[in-house]
Amino acid sequence: AEMFEQETTDVNVDAMKRSLGWLIGALVGFYLFGFVLMTLVFVYAYLYIEGDHSRRRSGTIAVLTTAIMYGLFVAVFGVRLNGGAVFVFFFDLLGIPVF
Image (tube, rainbow, N blue to C red):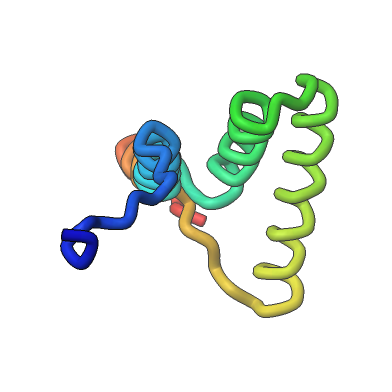
């Protein structure tokens, strides 16, 4: 009978669901609102909610992270970042050239 006993693992299903929610929210946000805005919002929200940091510390880290990521991708690697579907739509609607 011992041969067929299953090993139990300490899997926190709620934590996995929360992490999946953060991932899906981030991916949808990156598509809709672009890289720069969502990096700022995501890092701030994640640190404040999940990391239990203060608003000031979360904001400071979010701004620094966004600036470093932007600098690396744009200035160093020359990557054109996604501006976000919402902004592209409204800029196009208003006749403003998309960056």
